[in-house]
Every structure is written in C-alpha cells, then in structure tokens.
Amino acid sequence: MANRSDAEAIRTIYNDAVLTTTASLDLRARTVDEQLSWIDEHSGVYPAVVATTDDGAIAGFGSLSPYRQRFGYLTTVEDSVYIHEQFRGQGAGRLLLDDLIGRGTAHGFTSIMAFIGSTNDTSIRLHEACGFTTVGTQHKVGRKFGHWLDVVILQRMIEANTGTGPAT
Image (cartoon, rainbow, N blue to C red; front, side, top):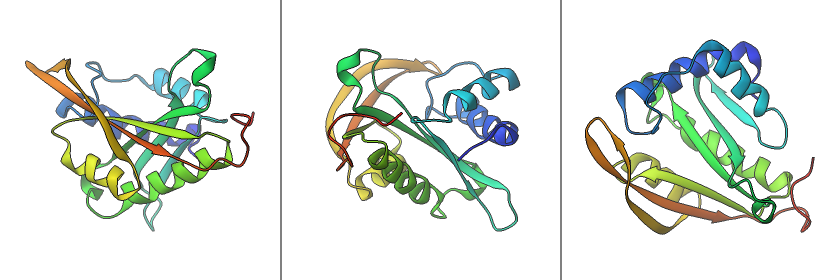
C-alpha cells in the first residue's frame, strides 16, 4: 500500500504524466498537499499501491477509485496506473495492475473500468494482457496540448469474494 512517505515520489511520477503526456487529462500539476490528500483518500477500500525497485525507489503507482458517485455503481471501480519514465517496459505496470485486480476482488468489487487515451497503446495492451476488453470509445471527450483526444473504455469483470458489494 502507498503511504504518506511515498507522496513526493508519486507526485513526481504523476506530475510528469500531467505536464508531458496525455496519460492524464489533468492540466495542472499536483501540490504536495493535494498529493497527501489523494493518498489519504486511497488508504481503504479504494487503495493506492506502489511498485518499488530492489533499492527502494518507487518505479510506479496504481490505484482504484470509485467509478461513479451514485450508490448503484458501488461494485464498480476505475483503475489508474502510472510508471516513472525510467522504469517503463520493465514489468512494473503488470505487477501493479495484477495487484489492483487482486485487491478489487478481495474488496468485493465485480468490475474494473479503465479509461485510456486512444493513442496510449502501451496501457491498452497492458490492460488487455490483464484480461480487460474494450467496451467502447468516447470520441473527442478531452483536449490537451491543442489536440482533441479520444478515450478507449476497457472493462474487466472480476470474481468478487462476496456478492454484496465492497467491504469497508
């Protein structure tokens, strides 16, 4: 699990994605306080996890978040995975996504959604390798760096331990 001491490393990875890629549609970098709040929000049934190197550096992070705020969507979550540019293509994304799927199953969720920019082939392939299937595309729903962005929607059904919804 991610903890508050991981905030700066997570913030560095996330802010790089915000400022240099279309992996996030955020347009403004996070502050330290915002990152700490994000970690606090992802410390229970909606976890944040980190992948570390042998020497303890954080190679990437991932999280599960509520899919929608309405109560009827309670058994569905959305995943996010971000990898430090130095560690991309080395398996950290797969480790994180597998971990999140396991945690989602243990917490009683039945479906994990991923919303990925249509040009992010690496993330789409990662999700497909982890059992996600494409269920749709949203056209021109985002705009960043002066370009319209399509978002591919992927979904993975999981076998939850209970049929009653998320454990608290």
